[in-house]
Length: 210
Image (cartoon, rainbow, N blue to C red; front, side, top):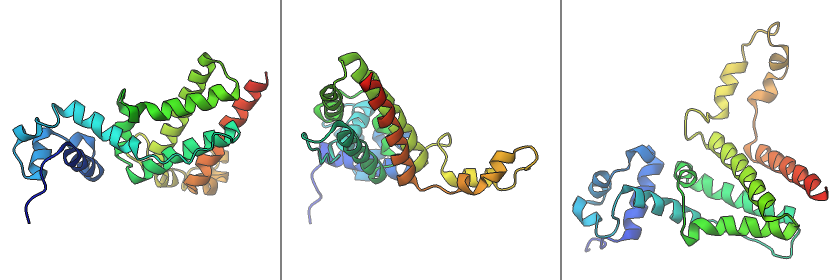
């Protein structure tokens, strides 16, 4: 059976697979060429450099977000749908999530989630300036929560490391930590994400009423 022809989608798929296995630092044009069994120079006919390849990875991941959006729904429901859709795709591509949030994307795939969010917030009654600031707040919350949950970097460590940190603390020095050790060690990521999301929505609702 003849080998699949080299193409940009095939190169991007190889990069996504490598990132998910070993992280974004493992990506190089030489490594991708080796994984595909082709010469490095042949890659440049489809992808000019590593930066462009990483942009393509981020855009491919974002393009797979499924927004089951209802334009007739209330804005809080639309915000929930959009945030949960991003969370879902991050679970499919946990390490590629770091690539997505580190790229400045100007393609349709990169701008569509931004356009949807701003349309939702503007429709709720916020002016352009507030809509942008609220969007940035949501992005900061969503990205921070997801990176911690998937544990893609040491800084955003998985919850089980907190478990190791609190189980043997001195209750005299840290009475609250000791007393709440069980709660600190137990984490339902879906429930925690939705709890934080609701706090943001409630705070923004108060601001809108002002």
